[in-house]
Image (cartoon, rainbow, N blue to C red; front, side, top):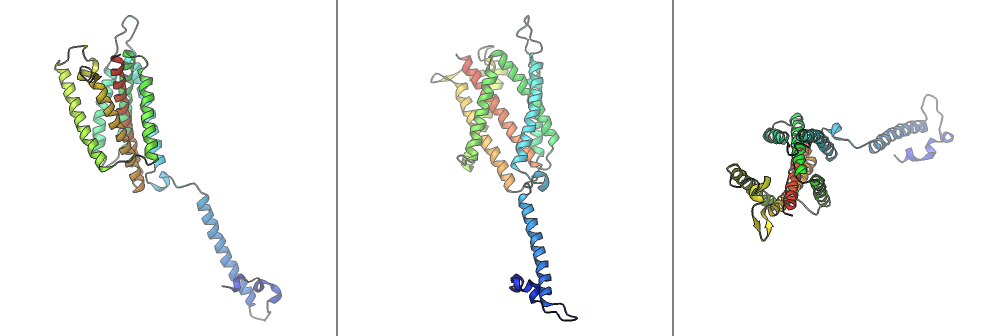
Length: 302
């Protein structure tokens, strides 16, 4: 009302005193005070809402990028701890008298356990996300990474640092390109990726079977079988395939980032952040192993 904002109506000098009646100015003043108090309370509440920290995943029960990042860091912390165990276990039998006594048991156990858990998590996550299984997967993957890294380091000293730096570089560049919007997942690219992935899996299976049946003489191909036995235009087949697989792993990271972004945008439950972290870990471990193999082939041919 216009009168409530006029100072004259709140001035006692203009109030008409009549017995038994409340002065009109007093009524206006009381009404103005009530409205002003309500306005001030609403304003204070609004300012408090803006000043308060943004609601996080715990408050909303929804998936957020920040919460998913924390989950990812936690999983990699578990991986690093068990990787140290795998490394020590692998090299425990190595002595000056028996320098080649490197155990493959840790990374075999880690690879088998990680594969089984990855399958279980992938096929059951649609019904329920079980963080305990994802923790166990990280532990087994750490055992695998630590064991196989120690084996490769024994064969080619310094290779683990090289592979680690290369992996971090690929992950960092991929994340930066995705965050800047310069690279995005697309239906066509994903279809090509899936075809290439199936082809690579078939190739790897054939390679393993041929090695098991002695298609490659002992020592002729090292741990890579036909990857180290053939070349195209003077370039080892393992190098060509290795580069392609690294590109595939980088695009897989893009799919992981896109999946997390979609989950946050669609308001997915907070527990699905564990699946986002799980996906990133699977891809980064795959990327690291492929880079490790690629560097080993390059160093083995020099």
